[in-house]
Length: 309
Image (cartoon, rainbow, N blue to C red; front, side):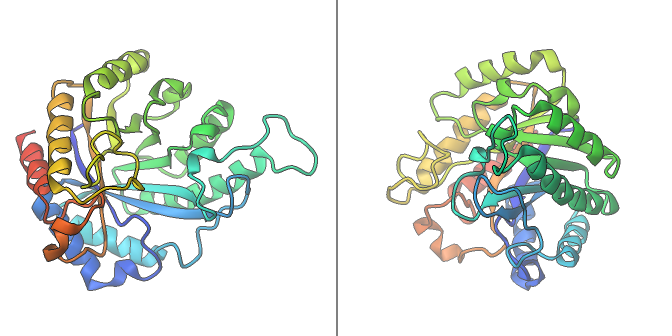
């Protein structure tokens, strides 16, 4: 697998957002200013709670199919390669890692089989779009930690996806979970979220390498990044951390992450988190404390690293 020089784009975009001229300009800037060669279109369907069995991918919280296809076509015109990543959020604010049900069916309680049926319908819808638009990869889930023990259901689900989509299939597990997925053999590419403390990258890369050795599959970080906020380099996964804006902290994090990962030839790229479809004004970059890198020093660090590969 070639090295993935990627960025996640458009997370939490809703109906009509990809039709705006600002969204296309944002994608163009992403490629120009970061040196990215891949764009990951991450979609956020909704279920009401972590114990709901119905997934809504038709509401105004999702970009429409036509606008998604149009943005994929525009990305192609820019020379970008495409990864489609349909995932799920809980409307009540619970993180998707906590989606969970009883292992044994109990009358009048929500069931795994009903959730997987809804999840399969959702994923197959976008697998069809990925196939028709010739996406290079489909990531069929993200950080769904409590679901990952249901190996039989995941294997059966991925087999159904393969009946629709013929490209590379990956699953994005969460940080620290790389050794807990028993069904990595069912995917083509292993990926995880690389939100590791700035001082701990060597330890974590050692652990990941040992955990994945027996599968002999390519690996990349489908997510990785750090808010530009004081303290975030130690807990880059904590988007709610309190602290003053610090573009320098974000820059130092990216420099450290790339330095350590570049020593490991088995790390085959990044899908950095994240580039908004509707950007803040560049004049506000120094006061923005989010994951975005637009107009911040980390932007140049990323471009330099990608161009060096």
